[in-house]
Picture (cartoon, rainbow, N blue to C red):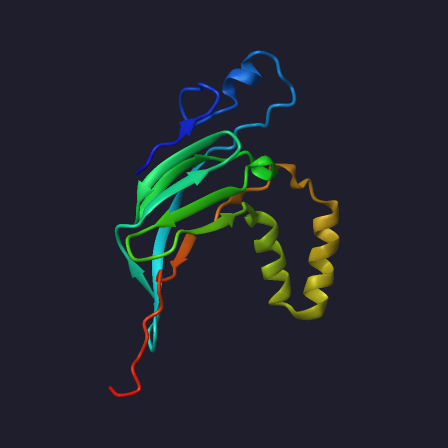
Length: 162
């Protein structure tokens, strides 16, 4: 597990704890933490994306950063809808540096809509009405897996004489 490095001198996983303790009412509410998986892949013809180990990666958010080697798990704080989007970049010898962003998802709402969709159009309409009346401020939020596909620095050239 890879720890984060808070940018504001905070200790522990909750990077806004000092702000809330100082009376800052705009600091987001801490909602727990999550181990975000960071994985690197290369594309192989006839096999698709194949996982590779050993890419050097960095993860950064507005309040913290981390460095790791894939595959890795990074413990990040969750602040529900106020969680930061994560920027993840990886590089490996022989491959171009690649970057993706990973946004947190409202899994409570996604699950609610998925269950409604399984009941057809009437289910979707019913779930939309329920969702509109729900207090979504306490929903669970999670990050998906950070999947980085690395591209070769120079594409392989195939000779026509082979």
